[in-house]
Image (cartoon, rainbow, N blue to C red; front, side):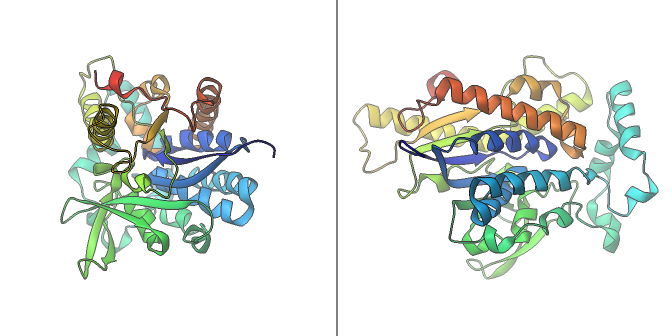
Length: 347
């Protein structure tokens, strides 16, 4: 390849099956040989995408990353409704369709209501994490390798309410499952913490960092951070049904940590621009964003839990298109200036 290579970091949001949008984005970025990914930070579905990207890259570069992502989502597409315990699926083969029909007719979600009224612990030993069989197929040796891009996976410590970012050899199968552990759907994932010297329980990382940006501020990493967002920041219509209200509460909650980090970046950039802070003291990161809020506004939040091939393919195609549009508009910004206008975002 001729010409300079632009190195950047990727920050990948979580959002269940909607993470297939991120797959499409990554697939398009991998077609750009002049772009090299230095590090990935991911939460939930973003963590799965990041782990597959890295494992594939370590094995066979761009082609390997593309193949690993395609394989990941082919397997996710066999899971079906993530809210159903594994043993229930043969017993209730039409449960997902029944749930969708009732939701569209009565603006309620039986599976969603069940998740609020029952605990995943109620199933006892019969409960199985439906994502475990997907994550187990990842090459964890490659995921934890010192080769390829750095990998950071965020999860929420249930006891302290703080984020824990797993990296290097810490990125285990359990760490990835912890990052995607919705507490109303999955049993908490327990992992030993060398800092606290105790076994800690973890929930979805989206509560404390969706995705965490701060690991990407390391001085050894490039200044450009490209965020792939799948939780819409803006919804023009005020929700008025029980399902819509709960969905918007969840969206705001899962965006709150990211908004806090973006506000901090905005504050630091203003101080640097005013000469009150030196670039030697704080990193002046260049932020970029790929999203499709129009599509995500069309989809119900419950569709995040319905990992079906048709939805996955629709989201993949949308992500590919969004990334292509971003590159047409902002390719020259990468490595030179931010394309995400934080002043307008917080204005």
